[in-house]
Image (tube, rainbow, N blue to C red; front, top):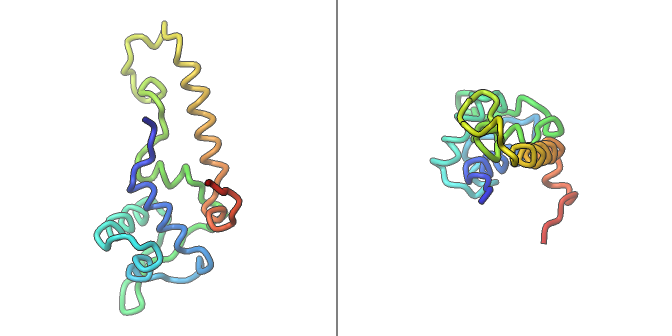
Length: 139
């Protein structure tokens, strides 16, 4: 089954925690309180999000993290890929790997490529700022 990992989901939640305060420095404790995630998970993801240039760290008594990009410019795809790597439904869609002996004769690669592109385009079209907008209501 296709599934976004918990860590990728939590990374989106962490970045979304900056809604309404994206020019402010948030401490890891404030992020924990806003997201209700465990400290170890938040710290692990904060480190990754700093390495992937989503957040800028600040040290000291008033330290914490600040967004490097506007929430309207961060797509859900970017966050998922920062944590999980490329969005790929099948291994044969990875252009950097030659891992399928049937690639040249495969009759399903085009369908998977089409579906994969649709997923990527959808994830690219959803920005973190959209999360709090009620633009996407799921019931």
